[in-house]
Length: 211
Image (cartoon, rainbow, N blue to C red; front, side, top):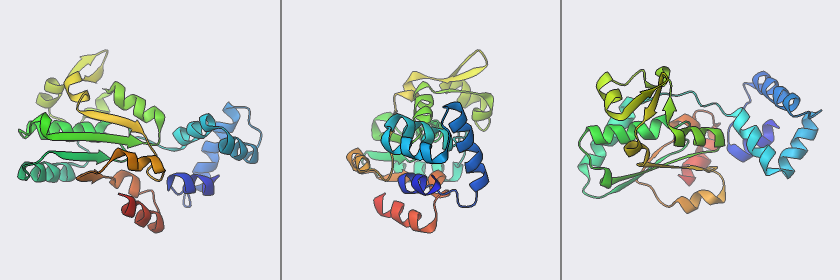
């Protein structure tokens, strides 16, 4: 299963086999699957189960303005160009990174019409959460009160991103190594640090050639 997951997603569990074993075991028990071999056969023949195991094994803990140095460097570069730019976040996790980019660009005076942001992730649950854009206090902890009040509404102790920001980012369930990735088109800037850290060196080079 570790080898199959690596081949499909590029993510390696070589140093986390015990964690993988526990996660896969719990996944099997929840679905009355009696062996790892049975699970592997199911994954190969059933796209629904395959997506479920991908969702189960990929984590999505992140927050707004997590990589501020990179974001503000992008803002600087965008302001220096006279043309519209396309920006890709791969993976986009639960949306904090692409939404952070949109907020940072707007806060710097860049018009919304000057940029297009696409977020992709192999985790369908994460993409659904991105589209809903409802976050907890931990997710917005690095944002100033002024930015929070400007771009979020507070409902039942949850921070709901305003529609005008949500509309600036489109999300898709896409595997970086799948042929469908090419259909997204070309991008001027790509944010991929948060997936490359889970790749071995060979897969990092493969991802670099694709991006």
